[in-house]
Amino acid sequence: MSEPSQIAVDQAAVGAAAAVLRAGGLVAFPTETVYGLGADAENPDAVAAIYAAKGRPQDHPVIVHVAPGADLDYWVTDIPEAARQLVAAFWPGPLTLILKRASHIPDAVSGGQDTVGMRCPSHPVAIALLSAFKGGKGGVAAPSANKFGNVSPTTAQHVRDEFCDMVMDRSELAEAAAHAAVAAAMARLGGGDAAGFPGAAGGATRPSGPGAAGLRLAVLDGGSSQVGIESTILDLSRLATHGPVLLRPGHIGAQDIADVIGVMPNLPDQGAPRASGTLESHYAPKAPVALVDGARLPDVMRRLAAKGRKAAVIHYTQQNTQPGLHQAMPADAPGYAFGLYAALRAMDQTGAELILVETPPQETNWLGVNDRLRRAAHGSSGIVEMFLRS
Image (cartoon, rainbow, N blue to C red; front, side, top):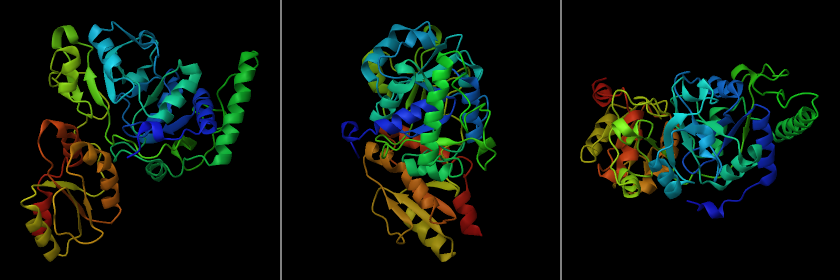
């Protein structure tokens, strides 16, 4: 995987994408975790376009991404010392903090809650975009850049595959950036506003093409995401009564957090805030996913083959598999996480009826991987036995 310092930043493309954001448009951009589908976090119409493009439930909140050194006090209130300690330790990086939102944050961002998720990503292209957007003072609301519930994208091509009918070509992006620049200049002179380029949320000339309500999408290419699964989400909004609560595991583990704030995070309770990517069914390919113990996997594969069933396999130990229908994964948690979503997408594209995943190790450092696989396999209980009986 590429180190962040080795990733080239196309400043012209970043500038055009920032102009699209200022005009109320959508931009897919790389982060170190997965690619995000971004819009101006302070523009309710633009945020609504994220939900429309993804088919995302309105009460499912999105995360606000900010540039390094951004004024956190502008976005949230009642910031505990633990939050400032974690920001100092892990930002820029794959940690989202849930805090009490400021009054000007749109309900669309928070899903109607009094909290908001904040993150500062470390990917150089994300940092460049966030620094260019509103002079580094803006926030970009962004869930993962895929249709709701699908496998998250870790490359720009994954995004294009998800939103093929919405993606701007180079000429459209250049036109949108030029239009936004002119509109912004007119706004400064009191003669217009910065919104309304073709495909922007609320734009007067929005086309009626095949995308979601005619929306268009700019895509920034930053190579493969270095982490490969979504950020750790930690709730600090109820610190006095519930302590820190780990809502979603990720690359930054509970022990990493405890080492900074001196307290091990608790597990979520019934009253925990809703957070991005925490629904029981999520991150799922089209084919059903089944977790199978490694010792049992060869027998299951043999019996499915005897039934004439087409099963793809994702494994991390040596297994006898059909060429083209398997993906060998690294045996370490970071390496596995890096390739997980790409493997799920690749196996889905084989046309397999079923994706078998060798159950990963259950050690603490595999918590993020196991969380994503459990959600991807949600609702598939008994699917292997059903295939074997049919």
